[in-house]
Length: 267
Image (cartoon, rainbow, N blue to C red; front, side):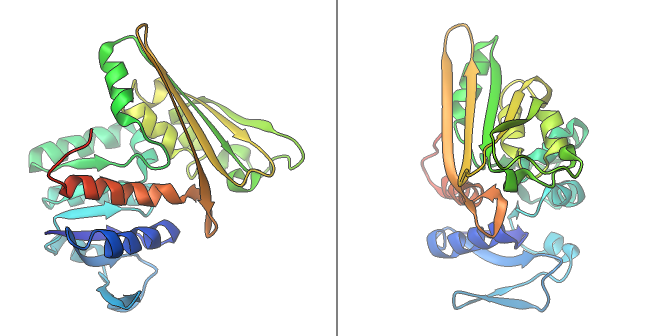
């Protein structure tokens, strides 16, 4: 049984903790949660008392073998490298952080030197296997189109305080994945994720559509080379407590952990 620590206990973090306790308890012992807004030394979750780390150093000195980040881009930037150097595997949920090529290179080097692994979740999309396969074949390109409600997009830096129309569908953004995550840091992790397993964030084209009345999120990833083409479309409901994220983002972490613990690996 692996020992697990989780950084982040927001809307998605709560879903993940519940999933671990209810579905992965045979494979993982959740030894603690770290979130700067939580107080006390324990938290009660569904009748289970879980320890809280009172500071990040306690995470590093704990006997956790895997640390899951589900706290946002800033957490990866602040904690990712230190987790790997503490000889712990790192699961990254805020994949948008890796659009920073310097940060990604630093994390990969630290993982290599420490003999640890970085696990990148598929989040609100999937199909990493076929994306990598088509790009390994050569001469491939990737495009991502995401459709969300204006409410889930409003407030993004790219919009500069202007709210999107509520009476018509509009293209809120067109550009590459690196530009997308800078302009919409809470909405376009999927674009960076697709870019990482294909040609890179700067080579992955993104279109972000604002659709009034949209009750969930729809992501369509198209990857094509001269010999094959894959179109992956995923629609999911938003988390009512966090309309900028999809509940599948948290569940994808649980699925990744389940796969890591299984004697059979699914690529």
